[in-house]
Image 1: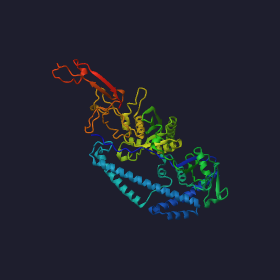
Image 2 (image 1 turned 135 degrees about the vertical axis):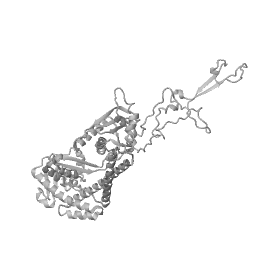
Image 3 (image 1 turned 120 degrees about the vertical axis):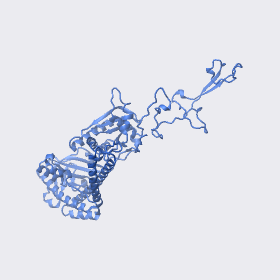
Image 4 (image 1 turned 90 degrees about the vertical axis):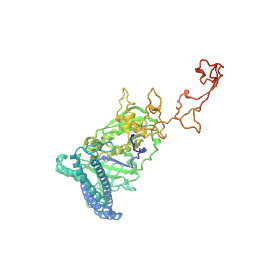
Length: 570
């Protein structure tokens, strides 16, 4: 029985990001500068913690009037602009926790469904790629039964919290909080952990204001790199300039998107700033962020006008292959490796370096489109589906799907290259089945990932992935299989066996004639229809049958034949 294929979604051009963030180090800070930053951050952090607690207690009953009341209460303790930044940050953090809470509920529902399915199967039953089988032993079956009750109770509790609007937020991070109980594993002393915990709970960020000087009145950054901060009212005595402001000795020079930032502050457009300390390095950084209008999405056919590069995402490398406008692979495949071990900064740098090399190669080939799978391993990485296969779960969880796509769309937009997202269904399977062996030669070894890159690119171009295999050379009938004819992408049933229709004018059936499986016309000069006119004389009277010979050229006793031929086209 043929396998039932799931519907394949249409490819689309991914939209670029609508926000930008750049960062630079605050070099040359004096001891007084660091003291002021620490005191301002700690004071505003206490106000932010209190406001976040008020916002969480309000839950779903929060309104615009309650938001205004919170801001009025914070204004005498800081300033109107600091109060607005604190209340908005609390609201955004509550909304993020709400979305994460819903995602956690979806994960619990998925795990419960998998456990219930596996418990319903006989012990030792084999699974498939579509659904897992039963558990291996009765002991494991009993343990999973108990876990099913635990997850069910946990799901009921989480649903009740979600419906009531209750969220659980830790300012500073839950991971850092838990490391307090495992200082030896985190390789930290209590003093080092306390310093990191306090730095993460500081609040030194301000949203921009359009129409104000340089786009931000709370944390102001001038075109020459001078940074000044509007001090809260209780700390106004620390100011070193007028109007309760403190000017830092450090200068900021953005190396990335500097001209874009300069044009924005010259027009007094909103720019948000954040000052934070990396305790491990002992360095202060300033991050500038702003929103802009996203680049208009061009049509898919326009993006693919110069060909496309298909990219297959893997745990340790990107496999890429260039295809022309007709879907034919050009040149040799390319690989861009990265190492995802280590910290988050190292992993992000590795992904960014691999994408930079990919984009440089695309611009060198003058290709304006990159095709990538629209992957989401939220369901595949669940613990309950793969069970003991920890290696496979770790492999899926380690693949940078979301971060890689976000990085690629952002960097490709800057380079003027479009990113085409395609459905990942059957790309690896069909690529290995139809493209791995044909693209392998004595000098080139094609891997399964390289063939998948070809399949991804062809799906982005709306070409069929599966290739048609020719029949055996000794037989040209249909019982040996379909012929090697490539149908158009827009043809109905292009993935199926081609139905042959007669093309000869003298073989074409009439309107009342039933359809037959006649041989189609070859695409050569020999296939041009020829109109023949024969004049055949009658046999001699010695012919016992007295019939006219149907094949006079094959009859040795036939009289001479007068033949006139005329070749007509079409």
